[in-house]
Image (cartoon, rainbow, N blue to C red; front, side, top):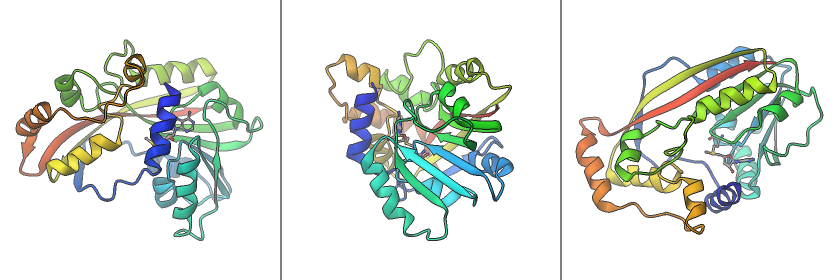
Length: 254
Ligand SMILES: C[S@@+](CC[C@H](N)C(=O)[O-])C[C@H]1O[C@@H](n2cnc3c(N)ncnc32)[C@H](O)[C@@H]1O
């Protein structure tokens, strides 16, 4: 499963959605970067896991003593180092590393952040300093559920336990003392069908990597047009084509 994900991200090479036209209406107060700002101090040492092309980390992470941002895709790290040139004052270093095989010393970071990426809670616990904080935002099983139900597949579609619950359990088992989990609901409105298609081609929303693995590693980069048209017809509004996102946010203290 991780091999397929690795190949996919290497091929994409960035996590930039600025070409896609859509608006967002928040239905929850929890915000990943506001949570990070709450805990970050000017002398904090921050680790950002699965940073992609560093797009969001460069733009939104608060200033700190140093941010180490990692990704297992060398292509993503190459993009991140190019993007970094637009932020000459940011104290940030991009490093290629697998989140599931981290090689940092114990008790190093004040804050570890992970947005929409794979994590290993026990490894994070070890590299956090005493009183360190882990902040996670993830995409849950019921994210884009209307779309997934129509296509009868998608990220986490067949999971017996939701992704948020699995993360919560792993974080608890790793030994974190205080764990707060919040559901995040937001409505996205895509301006045109092409904007929504561009999102679906780039993200794994309609892919189920384990399902793909079973079906001989065939990438399902096809969106069945009839089903897509049905979704568009049923979800078109004055604001655009609606996509209901269900994410989760976790703040856990060591
Ligand atoms: C959905 S993107 C999110 C990027 C960024 N965090 C953001 O929110 O914009 C997921 C990123 O996690 C990386 N990733 C997935 N599994 C990983 C792993 N085991 N170790 C390191 N990076 C991983 C991918 O290469 C990709 O860049």
